[in-house]
Image (cartoon, rainbow, N blue to C red):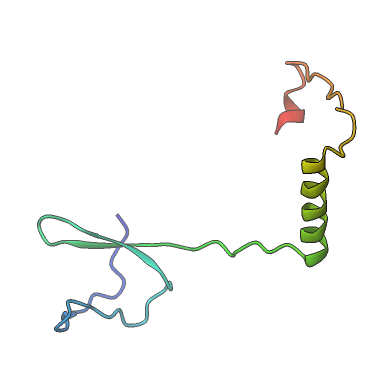
Length: 89
């Protein structure tokens, strides 16, 4: 367990909320134990991934062609030997 860096007294308001002063993160996972102990674990949210309009249009076009049956012949993927471990990393 890490050392406490800034102990403070906090009071819950009338709706049961507490406020963290100088919080190091924007989001936390809160766990309340049966004995009343509250633990906060930082939750770093991943940034949402956005694709360009051009890529989105290409995907839409490909799906339309797939539904119409306009597809190419299947390709053959070469078999990877067991001794080629470095290729699977």
